[in-house]
Image 1: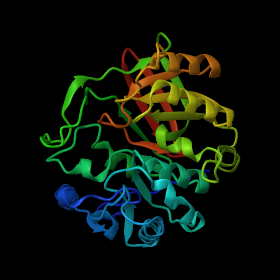
Image 2: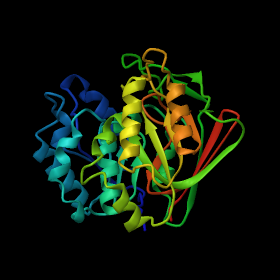
Image 3: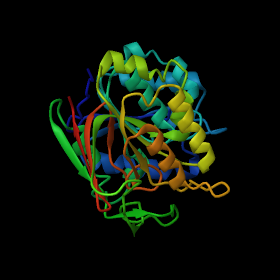
Image 4: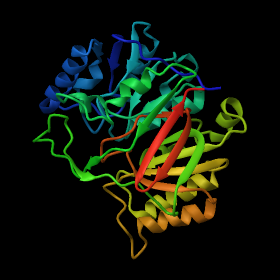
Amino acid sequence: MITYPFLQKDTTIGVTAPSSGVPEELHDIVKQAVKRLEAKGYKLVVGETVWTDDKTRSAPATKRAEEFTAMIENDEIGAIIPPWGGELLIEMLEHIDFHSLKNKWVLGYSDTSALLLAITLKTGIATAHGTNLVDLRGEYSDPVTAMWEIVLSTKPGETVEQTSSEKFQLEWQHGDPAPCVFHLTEPTVWKSVSYGKIKMNGRLLGGCIDIIRHLVGTPFGNIRSFRESHIPGEPIIWYFENCNMKTTDLRRSLMQMKLAGWFEGCSGILFGRSPANEPVDNYTIEDVYQDLHQELGVPVVYDIDCGHMPPQLTLINGAYAEVVYEDGKGTVKQTFK
């Protein structure tokens, strides 16, 4: 059984930095995002960790864990959204008492995905892979990004559907933000290693593969225990996005997951667009996807709206999903059951 948080209208959102903090010269973008959310009616509580950053960390691991725990245990706070990701969130996981976590949304991506996946696997509480706080600082949000509120305010038992974007951002232009933050210039085309229409059903799990691969073999990445305790007999749809890895590193990571049993009961795999995927020799990213498809015998769809080339869908770890792909477009229907 999966436990689903619910985003209350006008709730208080906690902002803490479990990975990297925000350097002083970028404090304004956090303040802008806070003002945008306050204009929507939310109250915001911004933790101390957000405003400091040194050696890629907002604070020592124990302090990051303490601030996160204080926010998730605070009944006045209804959701937690980190400012962004980073590099070393994994350091704080051993300092969190997962058994005491309250049922509220944690939303983010990149390095935050280690925390998201660990929470869901350890507790059965659904977590949300989607926008970071600083990406909500625009005058408005594009239709795909804006779905985060609708998805997180879906009630248990209800279904919410998202569709692929019309255009995506090829590269970041931090010095010249668009009214919606992103520069959406490139036509979105979902792709597959197979021909024709593809349908897949199962429980969603995933995140930034550069990060969550390091949960393999740890107490925070016990897929078998999660399946037995929370989704017995149900298939899993994995979603991944690659931030920095070359094709061979990605291949090694996927093989490690396979050998560790992560793909047992897998019904399909989704890969987000990536600024990486650099080929090694003549081993291309399409080769990686084809190898995985042949080995696991499941559909593989790639270049979906997920990850570091926004916009991105709000994908819920633990939710039951029905994914349909056809002619370069896709839909993701998530049921909170």
